[in-house]
Image (tube, rainbow, N blue to C red; front, top):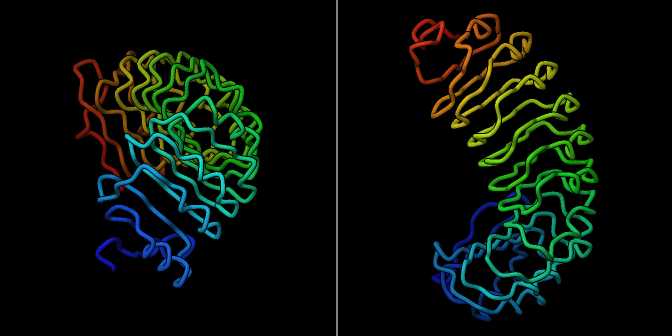
Amino acid sequence: MTSNFIVESGKYGERLVVTSSWSEDISQYILAHNISELHLNYAKGWKGKDLSFLSALSHLKAFSIIDWTIDDISPVNNLHLLRSLQISTYCKSPINFEEFPYLEQCGLRWRAKAKSLFNQKSLKRLFIDNYSEKDTSKFSNLTELEYLSLANSPTRNIQGLSHLYKLRFLGLYNLRKLQSIAGIEFLINLEELEINGCSSLKSINEIAGLTQLNKLELCDNKDIDSLKPIEKLNKLESVVFYGSTNIIDGDLSSLIKLNQISNISFQDRPHYSHKKLNFVVK
């Protein structure tokens, strides 16, 4: 029986990973052993088109699916006790987030019929891929968020995030039309900031007052005007800006002023004031 799945430790209890097509034996095992988390991933052997079995598993606290061929995931809406939901599918099934009053963590490949997500004030961690809007205004209600990642979106600004005061981590990935990070200056509790693959962004001036920041990643962003905005961020421990990122003014002296720095990584360029070898980190 166990050849159809494996059991491992999860965040909310034991997690069952399906490695085959679904069978009633799997449902029975989940119920008999009080399994709290269910993971379906085509790369790990999961095969199926029908999630109707979820209606009998309403006790689950975490559910995740990675399946690029499934047509309907609507039975997910029966899992009212979920605290974690991860959906990576191409299907357009509606996801009714009002059905998940305890949800605190979500990863989602965006779909138009998931807009109720933005009323889910219990969320603390959120990753959205392929978000289709040009701005982030709809995020403004998610005031309990502590971790937010946004990837592969045409958004041009992040002003809508300016009220997310509890954010400790912000990741912006492949937002190729992002032209400004204005609004980030209000995220005074931010500890980690990753901006990667945002090739239209030219300035990071707005981070100058983020005094709690301890990690900064600026990779594959092409031209960035200057690193001077970081020179008074005394809690910074890690600064990396490799790949295509090019600091236009070439002045890397701000890095020397960071007393807590323990990791610096970048691609040497002829116009830079310092080479990697010039930095002795703790």
